[in-house]
Structures are given as structure tokens and as C-alpha cells.
Image (cartoon, rainbow, N blue to C red; front, side, top):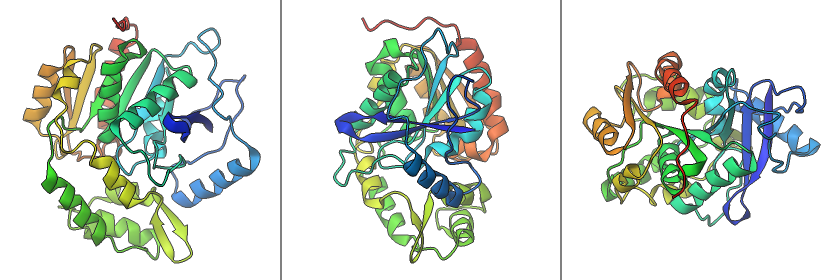
Length: 327
């Protein structure tokens, strides 16, 4: 089953948090976005809107829910449902929560934001505190990984361990932002069918070097049907605003401030190169390195078994690790 809780983030933004596992007997079941398609996601979310929500009620305390907390943070344009397979195997030993970050999924998309680094980090901090997840293991992909390590640096007493998936610490620069602007303009929206979505992002997109069904499916999950066809559930303008808050700066100093154990994971064909990943491990006070074969940027989505094989041992190793103090 899938259970939804609402979190009040920075500036009062409403955030949707999801648990993709059978809830304990003393907690009610909730429907939510399964991985079998955005249309079902929309229908089930509509039922939730009619039936009411948790409205940010904190999760059970340690006496009733001793499982260690994990917060899963998706990347730019992603959504919590992309973590569903990971969350389900995590739920065997953890309380795993995936967050729809502001501007994404079923969370609020305030017209003018803010979509700053500070806002994203504060939202994740609010989710940890309101859902009773601390001390938490943060698992982040791409933009979500940056949010995770910035939060770990800022609030070390909340974070037990950290998994960084395919996110660079170096500045990407103005040229990268212009490339994204051009790429967004190239999207042939609206798409007539979800099959067209899968084909364009999996085969026809000029950024695709070779066919990638997983990439096509990834983008199919972030589309919603409108009167004229299928369009993204997010605003491309807002995605660019989110991205411009990190691409011009390097983030090595914040990495160096992370006190907890941290695992840097890259796909062999991803955006994070081996040399930079290993330098990130060196800068992290307690860094470790892992790579997943035959995976691109969407490591956890491309190769879920390979992803699990490198992340699960790290989580077992850090399960009882003492949490750093804030001083």
C-alpha cells in the first residue's frame, strides 16, 4: 500500500510525502501514486483530495515505530514515485519516506517560488521533523543529493548517514543553463499519447545517445493528461529557476562540513565522472565510493538491482552509527 502525509514546508508550502509499503497495523492505509502510470497517479490523487489527508500529522514516535528513518529526495523534474522500488525494499528494515519537493509531483508549485537552495533544504528539514524521522538517513539523487548534503552540513544532529547519487559538486556554469533552456524549448509538447512521451525521451530526444526505455518511462511518470494532450506536471520555467540557484556555484565547502558517513554513487554512464566522484569522497570526512555498471544518470531507475547492491550494505553498516552533535 501507499500512504500519504502532508508536510508544511518553508513559507507554508504544502509538500506531499509518501510511504510505499504496508503501514503498521496502528496506522491507516492510504492510496497514492503507484509506479504503473501517471494516469493512475492522477486518479488516486483525486480520490485523496476528496477523502482528506494527514495534514502533516507527525509519524509515530520511537516507542511505537522503532524503524530507522530514511528520507528519499528526487532530482530536478522527478517525483517521489520514482523512488517506489527503492522505498519498498528499504521498508523491510526502515521507515522510508519519499518527498515530492516543491514544484514537483503532488506538492505545491508556488508561482513565484521561492525555488532557492535555502527553501529546498528547509523543506527537507521540515519533513524530517514533522514526520519524526530523525536521526535520518538521507538518500538523494541529483538535485536531491545536493539538498541532502547541504542539510547534513547544516543540521548534523538530524542526519545519521548520507547517500549521494550522481550529483556533481563543481560549478556547471552559464553554458549549462543555456543548454537546458534550449532543451526545454525542444520538447514537442503536448504529447498525443504516453507512448509518444516514452519514445521521444527514450529514443528521439537529441540528448539521448542510445535508446533508453528507462528514461522514457521516467518521463512518462511526470506527465499528466490535459485537454490538448500530455504535458509535464511541473513548470519548465520553475525548473530553470530551481536549477539556476546551484549551477553557478561549486559546493565543495559544504561537502567538507558533512560529519556523518556518506556514500557517493555514480552510474558508469552518468553525469558525475569518476575523477570528480573520487575527489568528493576525499573531501567528505567519512566518504565512501561506489559505482553501478550499465547505469546512466538515473542510477536507481536504470539499474535497480545494481543500485540496491551498493546502497544496502552501506545502510547496514551505518544503521547503529552515532549521530554527530550540532556543536
